[in-house]
Length: 197
Image (tube, rainbow, N blue to C red; front, side):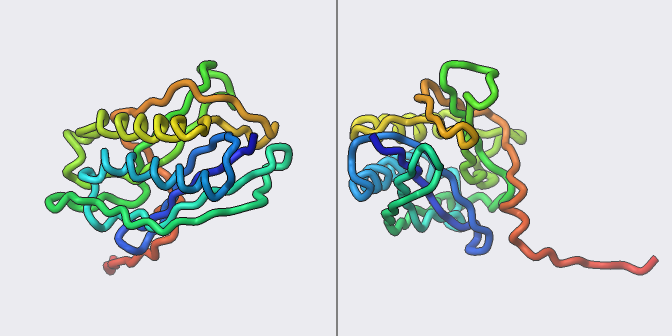
């Protein structure tokens, strides 16, 4: 069985890049696994595309075949993506805001046995009094992604980089509050308006 790292790359307003990823194991080739990831990613996006303006776009996806004992990739397959948001009413939120998919292995509250990945934050239309208006859509999208990967023979796992081991995922969860990922903001150059004291 091969360990695969599946990554989606996108941009916020064409300026701030973002990425999110999942890990699987399976017996397919890297190229075939990338095809499965491309399909699963499309299913995820189909459930949540209306939560984003067209300023949020996923433009690339790739799959790395990784040596489990070292964490190093030895092969890569890439696909171009054209996944755009469809919300024509709302406005972009700051790029550091994110929707977190929590990943669980059946052993809760144990260090190294839970994980998370950061999807981009929604548009203003995707909020209701400061909370996610449609967390069920995100949950449905994550469910469609995992179901698709499993149907193609890939097992979703959590990869522990410190111990170079994997543990099969058993559950995912979407919270109703936004999280932050500061590095998505750090790539933007801030402009200041000053005043004299």
